[in-house]
Image 1 (cartoon, each protein chain N blue to C red):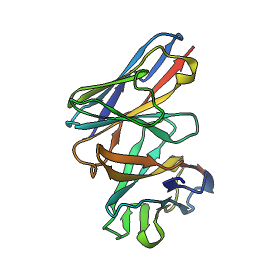
Image 2 (tube, rainbow over the protein chains, first blue to last red):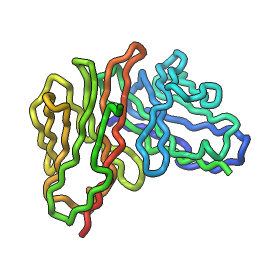
Image 3 (cartoon, rainbow over the protein chains, first blue to last red):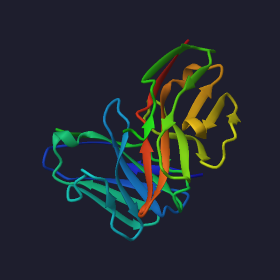
Image 4 (cartoon, each protein chain N blue to C red):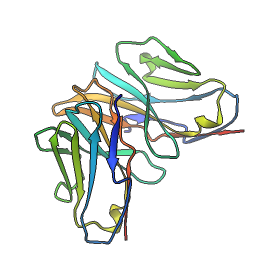
Length: 116
Length: 116
């Protein structure tokens, strides 16, 4: 149980294009989903928290107009990197939890984004 | 100041050795949760354990054990009789309550290499 999938697992795009990453909870309903980015050999940095049906809460320093998050259902959240630039290249990881902050976060396998 | 500190950046051990990964956290909350996650080379984070702030009992799961000491704000992780498959980056994380849900903070990680 508690499986989270991400699609795509990797993507290469040209600078200036937009990229959408999907995060799905496969066998449970996720009231809250989280988006992280991880640079090589570094820890995970929380980008935003999204609750189903409401606007995402972004961490300080994360541009909400650049990283669009949609959490339209209890099993799907999407992260769109708009007008991507090479500095946006990173490993993006989503996680999901059922309800309340006491619950464990279950992580997706990650999406490696490379912007040329 | 870092909320979660993992002082050991990298550790190398020979197979069958025991190894302890340190984690020190900082919080003003009385109720919080602590986690350990494993990130193998594939990149996907694997949940290992969750411990709430009111439960200071040590826990053992197979070759893994955890020592939670609230007095020193530490939550250390020991692998007994290490194996090559244990090679990974291990993250300690802290979860605190916030108005919008939770604040989930990862430590910088400890890269463990188990040599045959």
